[in-house]
Length: 385
Length: 181
Image 1 (cartoon, rainbow over the protein chains, first blue to last red):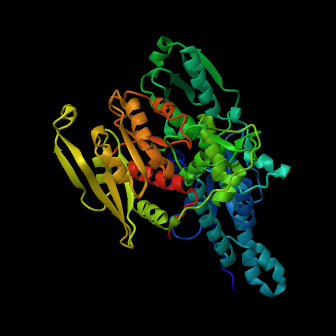
Image 2: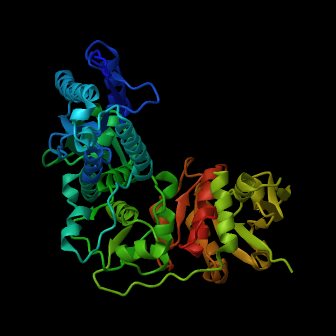
């Protein structure tokens, strides 16, 4: 007899790129007795289940990748932003309910135990099974399964690092209308649009503005150009990155009405909040209808010493300040992924530093200088930073 | 003959040129400061009368000279000499000075021919103190300039801020610039 009857095994769980509060909550959940069928993966072994947050850059490609690699995953999501399910990928609506999470984990565990039982069966009677059925099993603990999982976890972790702010959209062909949908979003569905609109109204009417959000009110004080809000950074990030539930309500109130509500509120410079919200909402997309072929007009240079930045922002800004370039041509000439260009344009457009020219002008070619010394200085400065 | 590469730091008295050079120089900076004797005396005890000097030493020993011009306009005859062979200009403006907008315009005009051949990045310092103008007002002064001039609010003591200015200067010279491995 080859096989040994195994005791019911606990699933190992890995929490991937979650915000601190969620991470701590889930850590408590898995370390306590609330879910006995699973434990956090504390070894270097590959986990059975990944838990991810849809609002932190998950897209169809990642989900397809998880499914293709037989990696179990639970993706948490906002009610109005449901990711696609697959055989291995379960979805869990926020706010997270312990019972629902427990049910999902148990169902995965049940599936895994069934697979393991069939594997045990195969081990007992190998000569009776055709070769292809052994290959099909890909048990969670088989060497093939382990290798595949290792790649998936690694690639997702790397992707998060590189694409934290710009999503992970692949470059598109602007002539392919089907692909255009992937890079367009509707600004009014995101908070950055309403923040920008609120500042405009406030200055036009010389009145403070209150914006209602799912987590509470955001106040804009036009005299100080500050936003005030009463929720933590995690919630703020959720609001910035996720589509809004319903039409956000902006009411215009006077300073005196506003003042009593502002005790213990966090404050943030208006431009930096609109900017970061536009980046988090964009994830490599531009407002619907943005002309990708016409050139970008840069009106002013963003104050990058005070703003959330990501790779290539200075390079792209320099190109726009000096040359007439379309969004597509910018990415092409600088040899960088389009999503960086799109994200930066979305943020610059939100704070009115750039827009797209009405006329179709042929993009200019960026001329090279003698790079040698400049490249050396640049490399040296980056190392020193 | 070995070519000299220079980055020029300029701006009015008290804008933070000496501090900025000091924050990124790989060698101890050489300061030619003297006790202030003119109206500068009201602003600070010593001032740069000839120039400040620092350097970035690249791994292959190439020296990038960092020159700080004296801030007083009566020394403007030196600016032309100092800028010869310069890679570009980092212009610092004291945001705490009520003449900040005027100073920005004056310095940009004084260095116009050098900027045309190279590039400029503007850093507004002391914005965390009693800032006299918003960034939008500085931008308005430069609104007619093409290409769009980068303006940042910076702290001259902060290496990151000065590095950001240098990085911007290099990319405005060549957006296709690649870092060496």
